[in-house]
Length: 385
Ligand code: RFL
Ligand code: PHB
Image 1 (cartoon, rainbow, N blue to C red):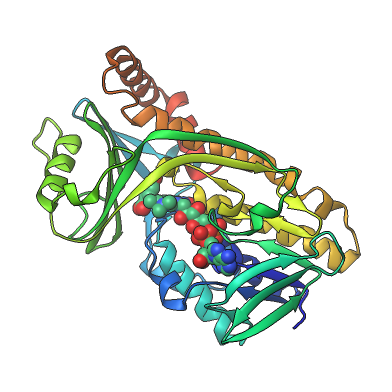
Image 2 (tube, helix red, strand yellow):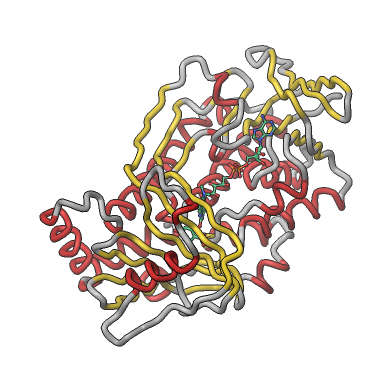
């Protein structure tokens, strides 16, 4: 098999890159090691920046997103049992849209297969070879047979646990692990608010998000090594109610919990994002803590840059963009990293014993919500300006 761009991974980065390339007449093949059902059901991101929404619309796959997605014009910050709204549209002219990552993945896969473009699910033993040469290859097993895919370029879009990043010989890694995790639930109940609620409480952070008018996604800051078996449904709702409490007696709507999981929180950046003819994009190259809702949006920014530099190469035989790819991404990568770490440090209980730090955190939250300049800085970061 031969193609122009071999793509490893059918997550948001790989699928979107393939579509961007296709729109510009560049061929690609996606090699994914999981099944279609698995990637379409994995519950992950929920918030798309307006720029990501515009991208999907421009790629002709935004129809269901515009119909079923929920456009939000701000978020609510909660602390000291009071509520404060950050109005994105008023402060920045932008909004966000709530649309599950797996729904976006379903739309991308459906469009891809409808156009009969190659997307190989359940490929095993995926490995890369000759990435330093003009003819890099992807080796894998597919439907019981050994396959070799020859490419001009390879895009490593295989997420944080993929294989591509291991092939960066001179990679410098920047990493920070947070000493807590997130316990996330999906529950069958109507949202309790029109917008997301980010709560900073003495007991820890909590987030109220949603997926549809009948499905909510809530998160609780928890211990890093939290055992999910210690969290009965009652305990989860009780903890959420305490962290979300307002002086007016606000109660979150409770419902049947259909999914529970614990996620660790980390920041990770690899530089450079390229070696030879291998280019990393998305979570394969960087992870941000989820508090700023940036990970998938950031993955999309990478592939927009990658598609552009590949287009320059194929249309004008201009290699300079390809050589600069990692540098071109560095600015948006660190900006998203900075915002995500800032939101995380602002809203989480960093040390349950440290009341001095907590007082400073609450003072910063007041400074942000009581000042137009402070609220604008948060709004600009959140909408991705
Ligand atoms: P993905 O989605 O991990 O996709 C990588 C794909 O590569 C496949 N793969 C392989 N294929 C072939 N061979 C191999 N050896 C392979 N190894 C792996 C995998 O099966 C998979 O299909 O990476 P991508 O495309 O870079 O996308 C990144 C996003 O998934 C991620 O950044 C977001 O989910 C992060 N995130 C959020 N991002 C947002 O923009 N907004 C949010 O609201 C948001 N909320 C979140 C989040 C992530 C969370 N978790 C679970 C970490 C909330 C949470 C809780
Ligand atoms: C989500 O809906 O899953 C979500 C929303 C906002 C975040 C992280 C996750 O910051």
